[in-house]
Image 1 (cartoon, helix red, strand yellow):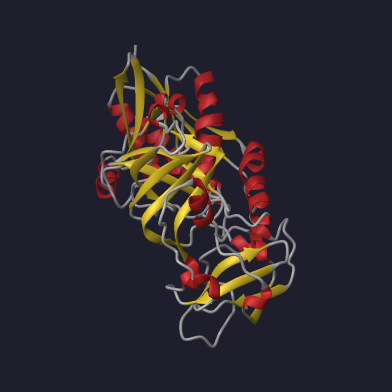
Image 2 (tube, rainbow, N blue to C red):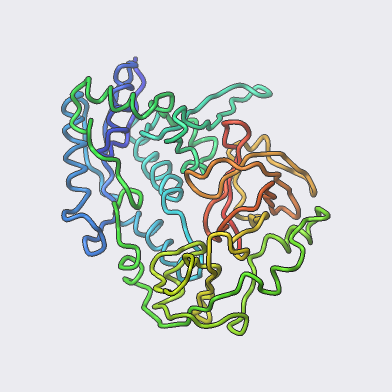
Length: 398
């Protein structure tokens, strides 16, 4: 008897080809389209994006001759993703909804729905791979980068656990994007030449300011420019000794006061901005672009610096609080105070992997990069790898 797989058909070419490959491999395939939260007032498309996407998903399901249905997850999506985003921005942090969508929706609620339908696995169109092997008599599941290095999406799955991985299939992980397109055309799938989706997971491309202004009220405040020769930058930024106190010190962003710089403009709310942002500031008359160095949501002040090499943008250390540490490979987790592991890491999607060392102190993890990193941002996820395997991740602390 063939194994049953429920695939999340998103209406894009990747999930379409994933369904095709599963069918060719002999699985009994069921297609489900998730209707998530949507607010047409903040989307940038002319039409409601989920309507077109669900119609395309249906066309693919009909072409393949597989069962298909739309399931409404809008309420739980709003509760777990949208409300979370509002709360994080209001607190001055920058969330990553795509990582949360995979952890909270696709591999939680969606997975549970699939299992209730009698499925053995769930599948997605992510560019990543899964491997398994036995260790001490138990199966261990490994999350590996996709073979297409330009499309690798393992970062978005950095919060998955062993159970979720055990039930997951990633059919296109061994393929290049060009090969996926070619397969879709060869089998006359309706999504073969459809553009890749952009924007928030299952919502579409949105105007972030309009999105945030739904619940976060505009509040005029000052933009303060910090000079590149600010006194705090002159102090040594070298880690002469690795210990808890030194790592904690260097993992913190620079703290500014209004008197540390000069006012160069006004903004409509510090909670609308994030570290490293350059657009939407409205600060002119500079030789180089101006970037956000820090936001103070309590005082409603944005601190900025001129030029991408401004020292306020760069640092080598980040911290992950104990409650936010997540290991995909639980068997490799650091255990003892001072334990260290050489890894490669990234702090945002598409960033090339960076050489780093991972340290454990008082159940907190510290990533120490070999080279300074730009715009380390609280609320985002850091993910660490060994070769092409993603070992774990965590929310970047302030």
